[in-house]
Length: 270
Image (tube, rainbow, N blue to C red; front, side, top):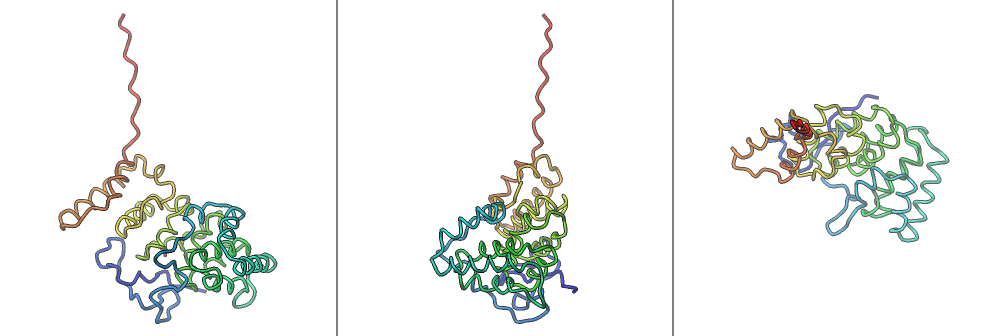
């Protein structure tokens, strides 16, 4: 099946001024499936006043660690539902017909576990189902923004190679800050080439995603003179336009400084 490789931008995002976006997207059309209209907000997204497990937990924790973290915060009915969903996914992994039963559970997770724990529950179900790159792509392109986030968080453990890279690239074309946060995790750090990775960092600065979300930032930015040039140009453009420079920009720019070369010991002329 062939899927379009673009995703809707966040409603209200300033796509016209984004140097990384070639065209403005219609926020009410689901460009991933070619259908519409799409609701402006996912009902399982976190709401003001709630918190979600940190991205480090979601993207880097082992399934056992993540399960312990999530179940500790669920009430008894939600905990029971998640246990059954994980057992079901483990017993019937892979693809079965037009849609697998574990994919239905992913769609239910927001209602069953609440917005605070839905992302983590979905990641756990993907782990239990041993979803491969093909299954993850299907869930991503057919899913809501919340389901797409879960796929991106699950990539580091489920796809050892670069087969999941098109999903990261798709997410980086949006202005959805929660999707971008999920996209710049360990999988992106491992597989994005230098050009793509630099633009991902710039996209975070443009959209206000904290650079703390960028996995392996210190190592990949170190000594990157091209990234330094891009950051300097971006800061100059914003200053010339009378706009503020993102606070994180100077932090990243500092990281691009090449490591200092130890000075040679002075010769002994005694």
